Image 1 (tube, rainbow, N blue to C red):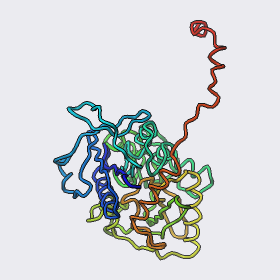
Image 2: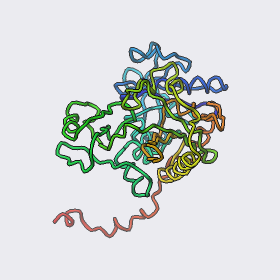
Image 3: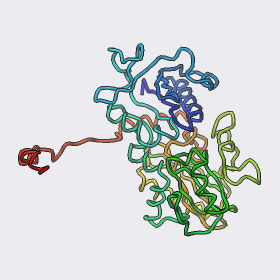
Image 4: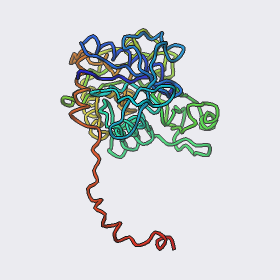
Length: 369
């Protein structure tokens, strides 16, 4: 993989965290001897080529100085093309072996970017368009888990007139979003419904489920290449005993993002719970078509384990979880890039579109009569 790209940022609430992940990936690949094209996706939606060795502070006020404008051309033979004066130039697209997708949340993780890269014919890491859409939709993922018989807490769509068939307290989450931002804990259903208008992160949709104050969070990373493999199990630690949930500050407000968040790793768990976590992770990987490196989150309440959420592009690409087996970040990235090329994200086919339906169709006017 001589010339990979790393893309990060994007119009998402997780924009800043994505920058941290992307800069870590770009630096690691550069240190491994690769020529890396770093691509910054701004909050307003523009793409820019930036220094692969830049520091996070360079992005604190927006697009860094010296950034070069790019356009993503989503047609066969397209890709990232230099932009001049706001218009696409006649230059050829950047020659890229594959793209490491480090975008968290929003269009970088919900299938939008994946679909554009598919149309452009660019190989990329992480979930496919379908896998990304499923992972980003908490209601859909929860339904898949329940349908497969996996242990899960009840979860339903929260609307202004929703009747909640289970008792409080409740946790209210953005239906389409990450695992920390925009999450509320409330005592009753009326307050939950009121949060729909007050919380900007819930306006695209929200889910509600029972809040379990005595539960603890567990995480495990899953990678799909060169074969399915699971990391050590992690128990993230909340910043204080009074914390209702594992929040944004617990996860990301540290020098290295998720890698510097407080945790018990490997988590000290009874053998039967550890086995259940691992067995469920394998099942979820198959159900969701995990590609690249994903993180699966659980809730543990006493001896009861619940599948919670899947994060298809986790913070720091979950590099910190690979302590047993110990896998260096550069190796994770190399394997992800190899998978991007060897296991394409999609394969379009026109099999069956032989024109017979068109030849037998008659007039369009006749069909409308």
